[in-house]
Length: 447
Image 1 (tube, helix red, strand yellow):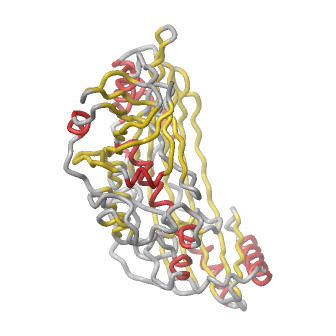
Image 2: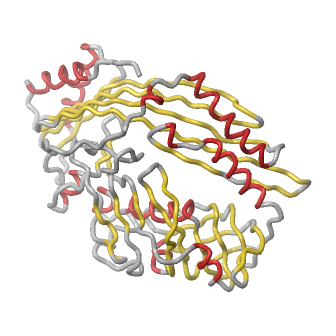
Image 3: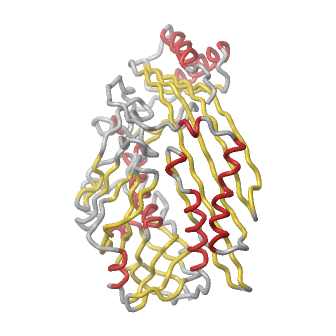
């Protein structure tokens, strides 16, 4: 990774701001390098490298906020964005909810967040990685058309604030996915597999390709299922969207101001007592971990759902200020462009007592959902999703794969109808953990 000096530019902006008549301010500069390799058809379609560098300033005056940023770190450009942000702040509408920005805090460093192999990865080396996924898929069954890709990112950023925060941060990440599509006459077998991590060594690219092909072959012979209400058993890949949607809806300004389906759930029982969800941004080497959040507040483990009850929102300093409480360390800063939101980090759902095999065996008639996204309308909570991959269960056994099947309803009803949670599951990015989940009744639209 190129060693561009971020600190000097941030200090330059801070010195200028310190001489101006403003109340609070922060400055962030970042550098990132992204490698991307796209798969289409029989192999790699294109590979690209992108570098993004910039500096952003947030200024507060009389509760008004001004934001400006530049993709140049030259002194003249830094001074220009400082002056622009200050002028915006002085004419901005005062926000009655704004109180301050966080001050400095000490926190133990979260280790293993930067992988030298990714830092030193060349585009040529990255271009070879998708071949192992395709080779693995071909070893299961040849002749597919493929979609997918590989991406790697390394980034550094520096944050300073008028309240005394000074943070430097470095992190890497990588991800890969593959979707093979096989055809036998009019019949189609298709599936999708993926993984992501802080380091390359934690991703088994051959396994991704092999598993994607095996799942795709299982989808041959799909049949339609009659409409009605049936139990659903969600795989970890599907339950991840169910629980991620909930924690996102419990995050930040939108949650506090009544703009999400979860805004009114604080303190309420929404699921059986077996449901426990923790958010933990302090796990060493985990994809969503960091020592501090986007405002310099220390990360910490946080119980969000306890015995089926919502016990907290996920706060940045702004939403916490509205409720007159402390930030939970969940600020998310989208690079140097000035926007600071809030959201979950590593989501961990506590395992239950059942096995997936037991869930299936105890189901008279239902659907095993392998791939579907249960992301609702974030305001209303209503959802409608296509079950892209799944199996009909009859008399406790998987019968055949299903097609053209849709599920719909209100997302809160899904949480309330959780019947059992598996004791096994899947860990994503070393930090996320999602089990399989059985939902008692869900409305389905088929034939």
